[in-house]
Length: 98
Image 1 (cartoon, rainbow, N blue to C red):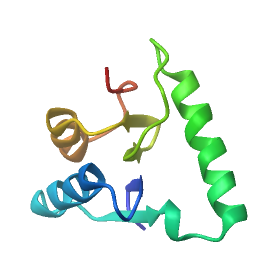
Image 2 (image 1 turned 90 degrees about the vertical axis):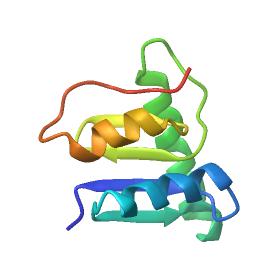
Image 3 (image 1 turned 180 degrees about the vertical axis):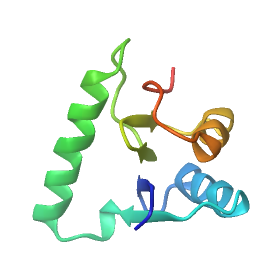
Image 4 (image 1 turned 135 degrees about the vertical axis):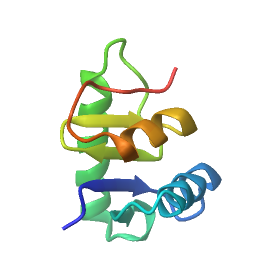
């Protein structure tokens, strides 16, 4: 089972870049293209993403990609934070996009 989960949109260039970076780092991850799921599953994931964004301090808008590793989260594309998350041995803190 993958340690990292990526919620993405199939047409999002930043989502594609985030997945590409994780592959480049040799990280195993589970990717979910939210826009390709049935509507009820999309709605559940969008609700979850919104709740995750609400937990960030300061609060952020829910955007894609959303990258999860344990209790760590990156909302939006940030190459430096993706790299840190990919090589982080254990959970540390919430990451978010400004």
